[in-house]
Length: 196
Length: 240
Image (spheres, rainbow over the protein chains, first blue to last red):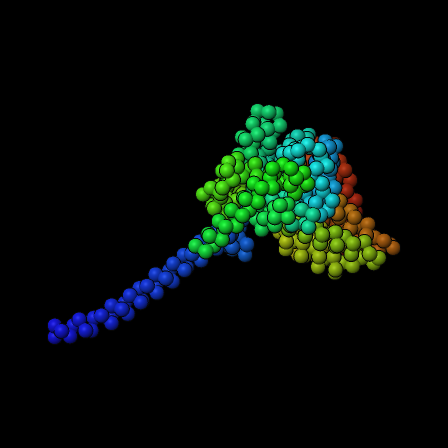
């Protein structure tokens, strides 16, 4: 009887380990899958969860206000060819966000405004107008599309930080720290390789 | 793990490329953008002074640009919202073209505006155009008009402090109704009673919004009186 027992238990153990290992493996795969899904924002992409943009910026854009703001920015010296500007209300506040699409494939030239730092200059010009104050522009976002129409980067900063930088009360490094952004990595890598 | 490795490899290549190209020598537009990115990545700690990726970089690649600030995240992701606005505006313009045909192609225009509203359900600019067209077509649907929810969504619940916001929505709609009346009354045709009713309702709202401002209320009183006259005998003064 005593000899029988070990002869029957080993296969059971093997079977149990297989089961447990399989279960752990499945759980791990599921965990990785869920983490990856959230990391790559798949729930937002497929409309299962609202993205921050959908939550905060789904209201009616101020189309007329954006037109006036764009004219004022043009008067301030920014070439508006290939520029689309949207003034979006920020939900739950009386403030707005100015979103500028700078599209080189539609004729936008970053260098046309002069200066060696056109990204910061563009941001500054978008908040430094009378209309921007009237529209209570609280944040600026810039999406740059290259000559092929691909979006390379999106950069954003609060209007206070931009104004502070323009006034000189914020150093360039402080301003850069206040800027947030996202880049289209494959497109940037490709463009960078072309520039070698 | 493979994804992480791939991300790190990709990032190393990308940052290496930035370091090599971001020297300021290339003054093309793309070069300037890459220069800016290079400086920004160093400032944000995504890349160290030597140009190597930092642990923050891996998070940046894996998790996108989540900043922890909803407003900044929304700004970064605003392109998706802008795309829906662009698409809805294209459809609205297409609907306008259909309405400006002789005779107006209202069915085609409604199809476009239905699609636009589907894209932008909280956008009163699009909703106004659809509801005015519905009235023009003699249809009164439950969502006809700038419904309370969409106006509240745009202007907040406190109607007193958001008078101008509300007035803008109703004024836009009144302008559209006026255009619609003009379109319908060509060749001595009668205007739809729904359009007249809507003119009456919108003028009433605007009169009440400007009840303490007689000068601003006056034009709406005139529109109200005219619409009242037009809607007096349905079937005779307006089209049923």
